[in-house]
Image 1: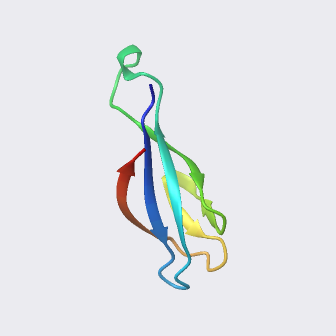
Image 2: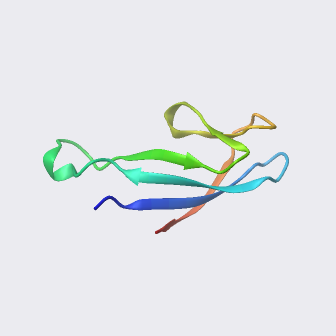
Length: 71
């Protein structure tokens, strides 16, 4: 079973709030290397960038990611 991690995000410029979801990569028992996660979703008003960065779609600035919570 893949774990899902959810974090609150906020734009430091306009204050827009939302969430981002990361999921574990496929079962690492069958892979070589470290556990990895992939950004799978961001709330409306945000966009995913290169390297897992998240940007406010309006202000085009990188958001602040808050503490993770597991779901």
